[in-house]
Length: 235
Image (cartoon, rainbow, N blue to C red; front, side, top):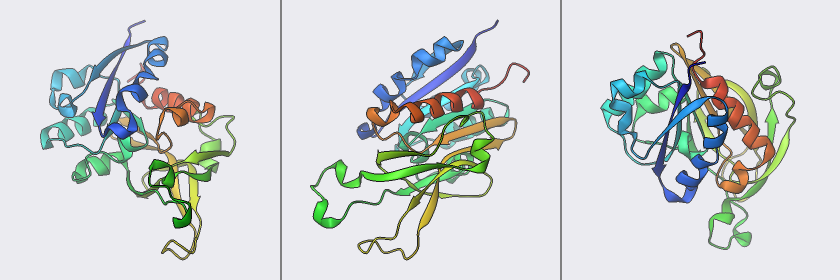
């Protein structure tokens, strides 16, 4: 059987541990028949020969910059059938200034609400909240979420701006708090898939740090999501 080809692009803001986070999934990809190429610069997306060989792109790049040529190359590769997958800020908070990228991914990080002001200590834990990832009806019918029930996390809870082209597999709800300015609960997608041309996109918003990525539910969802997104042999 011919090996499939995965391209991991990692970098950007170091607070999300892009190198270590991506490395967690390299053995899984290799065990599932992928040759894995790792790059630290998204400009590889502008390399047509490289992208023609890719079955799956796994991106772990928070914020950062990208050229118009690179975004065009990534979009074209997905349209031709390559998969795009990622988690947390590595895919949902990348290249904030590029609307073509945001349209491809289908969701953009807006904020992660914080704890009560009296409970804040001035570090990243101020944004760690107890919340629930709730599986949707579409999620229960998906191979990505099979056997996974609603589960609790204490980490950043992403508020995401999105559109209705996504198939939402799980959600999370931001409650009303007296110290926040919104006036009714807001539900955001937490796991979604998106079909784009002949390709597939998978996004999971949990994954702020290595502990979250090692959570059994989170890791299983991401692993299955990568396989789902990847170009199939019939393509």
